[in-house]
Every structure is written in C-alpha cells, then in structure tokens.
Length: 118
Picture 1: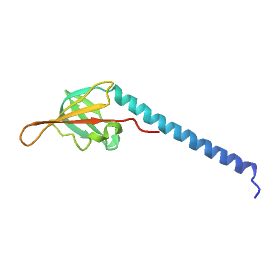
Picture 2 (picture 1 turned 180 degrees about the vertical axis):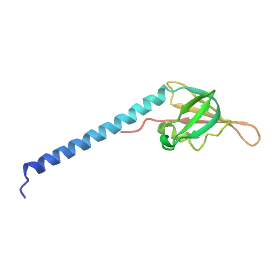
Picture 3 (picture 1 turned 60 degrees about the vertical axis):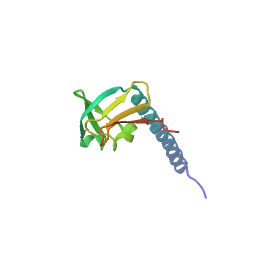
C-alpha cells in the first residue's frame, strides 16, 4: 500500500495532537492539586449551594465567605451537611470534618486527598 504525503502528514498531526492533549490534561490535574494545597478554610458550614455553572460542584458558606469545592475535594460532597465544622489548612492535603451524631457526640472524619497518578 502506498502512503501519500498527506496521509503521512495527517497521521503525524494526529499523533502530535494526542500527545499534546495528554500533557495538557495532566498539567491541569497538577495545577488543580496545587490550588487545593494552597486553600485554607475552617469554620461551621452555614449553607451549601449548587450553582448550575459549577457543574455539580458545591459552594459552602463559612463565616460569611463562599468557598468553592473543586473536583479535587469531591470526596466531601456526600459527607458535608449544614452545621458541620470543617478544617483545611494551607499546604496540607488533609481535610477534617466534625459532625454531631444522633447522641450529640462529635465525630471526626479525616479525608486525605492524594495527587493523581500519571
């Protein structure tokens, strides 16, 4: 089978595009994790809202300030409730969530967010 120059060129452009896209997506994941490490918040969750433009990721209101929870923090989405206390220190990959159980005892749940593997 004879390959014409345009077929070879098309193949090279396709392979190059796939390599670029893979590197771009991995870089975005690294940036998101670095942004997560830089975040700091602590206090009682006063309100939880879901805005359509945030694609299902919630915002939480703590001390009058809205905090956007990104996909890096998705392990929290099903766990948080209004009235829970939450602590995330800058530089840490751990999030501590304090909740009250039915007997009014405080329960601590600690979440560790790991960097995505390449």
